[in-house]
Length: 107
Image (cartoon, rainbow, N blue to C red; front, side, top):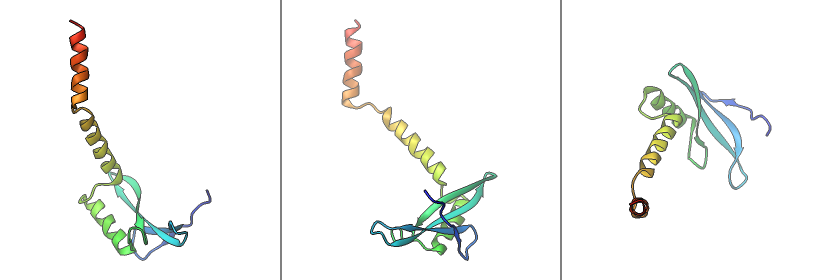
């Protein structure tokens, strides 16, 4: 895959790369950069047409993530994974029956 050229916007920490939409038309993909916990974080903010993203909206998302109002993508993924683990530990009727059957045959 060829290197994508980053283009600056007038907003600090916001840049875009040229991509293609599903219809094959050129579309800007906006990214944000900021520091969180001493580490540089770079995340996709959204696509120009698909997500109706503008440089100003991307800058607003960046400000929310810096202030902690909105979780970073990494924090969001960790929360989703924890939620999946909780759901996997919930007993369904099938799982209850399997456990019952296992214990019943051991007596």
